[in-house]
Image (cartoon, rainbow, N blue to C red):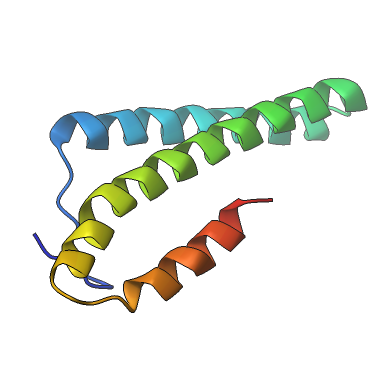
Length: 97
């Protein structure tokens, strides 16, 4: 199983389906927010929906990061490629806000 950049990363069908469902839900929330803004809905309600979408997106990011660490990163370190640590540190910085 190779996880090189720009190559397919094998994921279980169950994990893939879970990610797709989560992303579809987030997209639905964002479409709802767009409609709320077009309808000049109350700002507090819009912000609540935006917070829900952001939370969902953070959840998807955490799941993918965890999977990446458990598969691709472990594989590279076991193969002696410790440069992947720099990538991991960059990813952690990106998602730790």
